[in-house]
Image (tube, rainbow, N blue to C red; front, side, top):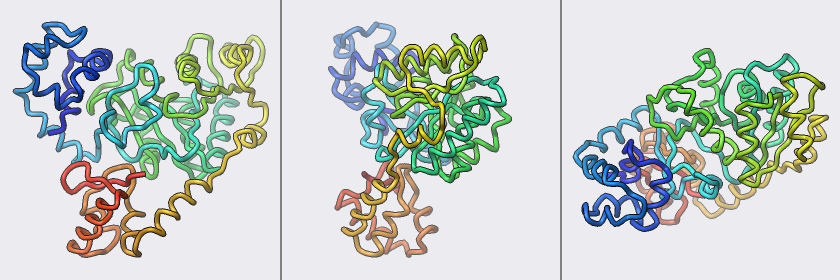
Length: 358
C-alpha cells in the first residue's frame, strides 16, 4: 500500500495539518499504524481529524491507486526521491503531486511564462516568441495552460522543439479550458501535466490561486507578459518573490490596464524584457550540461544497459513499455533492470514500473 497516497486522500487532513503532524509521526506509514491515543497526542490535530484518519483505514485505497497507472497517471509525494527538490523548500509546499507524462528535469533551466488570459495580439506574440526561444536554447517552460499568455508560452516551447509542463487547478485528467485539448495532447508528447488535486477534480475557481505557487516553485525564473494590477499572474509573481525566484516582466503602454501589472513589477525591481534575444543572453543558457551528465552515466553502463537507461524517464514506465521500445526479450529486460536497480541508476516505483534515478 502507498501510505502517502492514503494520507493525501483524507479530505479532513490538509497540507498544513500534514506539515504539523508528519515531523512527529515520522512518515505516512508510521501515521497509518498509530492508535487513536497516539494520534490524539500529535500537535494541532482535532478529534474530528483523528476520527477521519481511523475511518479511512477501512477504505480501499489500493484499488484506486493501481487504477492511476491504467490512466497513465503517477503519484509522487514528498516522501519519494522523485518528488521535485525545488518544491520541497517552498512555503506551503504541496505534499503530493499527480503527474501525467514527465516532470521537469532538475538539471535544466526552467522558466515560467504567465500573464493575462484575455491578452492583446502583442501579448500573444511575445509570449509565444519567448517560449520558442527558451526551448531552442535548452530551457524548459512551465505555465498553467490557461487561455491567453499561458497557452502561448506552451505553444512557443513546443514549436521550439522543447519541453513544456502545465500545472493545473484541476485533476490532470481534466483538460481546462476544453478548447485547449490539442495543446494538452501536444504538451504530453514530450512534457507533462501536473496537479496537486486528485484525478477527476473539476476546475473550481478557488483551486487556481494555490496552483500558482507550484508554477513558480518549479521554476528558476518567472516571466510575466501582460497582467492587470489584480490578477493571478501577480499572485504567481508574489509567490516567486517569497520563494526567492527571479522575476522578469514585459513592459507595456502607460494607462493600459493589461500593462499595469507588469509596469508595477518593473517599478518594484523586476528585470525588464525589452528585447527577447537580450533576455536569452542574460540567462546564459547552457543546454549541453545535462547532455554531458547523461553521457557520463552511459559510459558506466554496458551497451544494452545504456539502451534501457535511455528509455527510462522521470515518469515510471511499465516493463511492457520498455520491451516495446527496446525490442528485448523479457528475460533480458528483467536481468538488465535488476542490474540498473543494483547500480542505483533506476528505481521500481510499484511492481513492474520503473523510472530513471538522477
